[in-house]
Amino acid sequence: MRTVWKYCGVIILMLAMTLTQEIGFCLAGEKLEGTVNINTAAKGQIALLPGIGPKIAEEIVNYRAHNGDFKTIEDMKKVKGIGGKKLEKIKNYITMEGETTIKSTKIAKAEKELKQKKDK
Image (cartoon, rainbow, N blue to C red):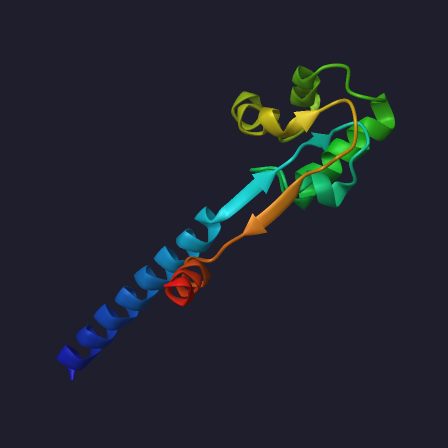
């Protein structure tokens, strides 16, 4: 009976590892295009930035409401939850002029493979 439980544990562990890898592939397929105007963008648009979720996006909007527009991209460090490393990740997607044009396209690995098979 103990041997059966050992095998069950091994199988569950293998399934968990497989699911973790599949999730990683899906997330790796995310691609961002465009920019976010940090002085005018809505919370949902800001949340698309890498490493920025709804909570930090809300912090950015609240900071902007209480302190006015950001003068430089470096001013983003004044927002709770944004440090130097996070700013490095997002600075290529940030602007302080023009419209917000950011788009997120998530492409699952399976969908890409299926499309490639259909094209052949």
